[in-house]
Image (tube, rainbow, N blue to C red; front, side, top):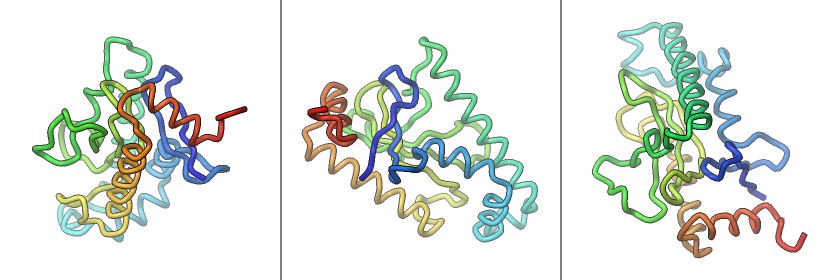
Length: 186
């Protein structure tokens, strides 16, 4: 059964944990994105046209650096109450409105050539559920095959489940978390 972990312990950032004994998605992705063997293999397999401009080692190093930057940004967002998650997470698709209930979002570094994405559902302002993430080396979300396709599917499933459960605000989401984590009646 999928569980939901509170990442910041301040009711703003949550992450799905798909394996009861495993890590939540944020921790899993942080570990994956800083694992030299995994990143090297991914870049070698999926680097495509980027490999004509950069070596596998250069692209891997860029990914490691970006993973560190995302970790730094999330730490700042957690520690500085003047900073908001809304500044990190943007609509998944260009042109999507910020006003869409339970909108699909992506978190990424805003400047330069970037590859890492955290995918999330916006519950309300400054409250997000991370459902997954990916190393994205192509322009469109489906360009990396199964990785980004799987993440798009997860976003759709979570959004549908949250809608079906009547989640419209943080309070509804907290009740949903209790149900999801099996804390009702305990």
